[in-house]
Image 1 (cartoon, helix red, strand yellow):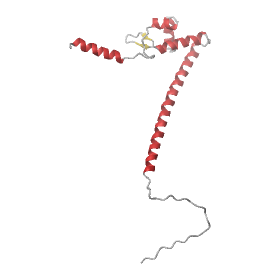
Image 2 (cartoon, helix red, strand yellow):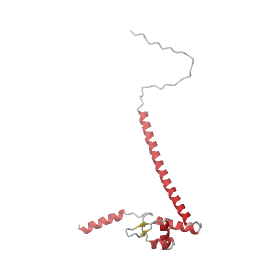
Image 3 (tube, one colour):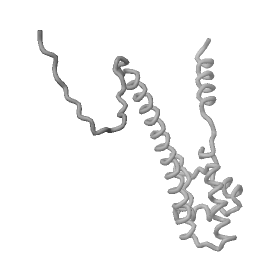
Image 4 (cartoon, one colour):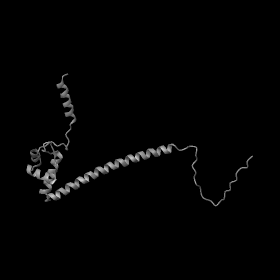
Length: 156
């Protein structure tokens, strides 16, 4: 095995571990413009306004993800079909992102509550298992007006 084989395997391992998701910034501005049906200058304007903020390369070039492309299409739809101005669209996007974040937080808290409930049930089961079995439970029968006098046994 020479140095090239080792480098190839290292590259293959890195390439195999890199997975494209809809968040992966892969599209340059010209491709993103084509996919969204908008002019590249419009994409730059949307970036300046904070409507769609793509990732940046070290050379400051824009890289759009599939999610960014969806968002560009939604901005276009809201603007053209619904007649909403860009400030309104920006507010809608902010609110949708806030709702998504809150849903994620609710899900996180629900999981924490479920985990706490399971832990509480386990602890409750431990407590019940630790009860002394030689004790007899006391059932309060009907209350009566009888007087009970206790007299200690005389010592012998």
